[in-house]
Image 1 (cartoon, rainbow, N blue to C red):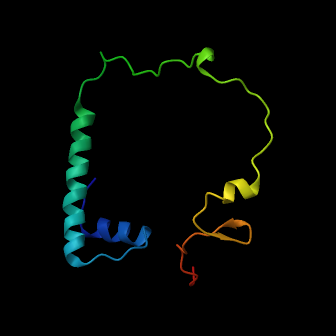
Image 2: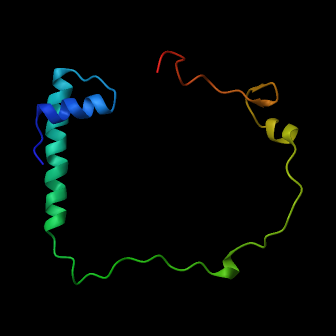
Length: 99
């Protein structure tokens, strides 16, 4: 894959961000390094290496599935730094502008 200004602009458009000329140049360099590293990994001979496997879950390590009464809303909210109308109150993270 060729990393050039056209590719960086396309990625910029797809991710809905706007980069400065300096940031575009840095992005182009970084992408080239990443792809070069991926090519190096791809060239390694891994035929003799057995795939890694997770150790199986032992049933004795699991807790018993016992039905319990659910936690009360008041108990849960008592740990919240802020509440509003019976819910957690959190800072606004999304602007309500056009999509």
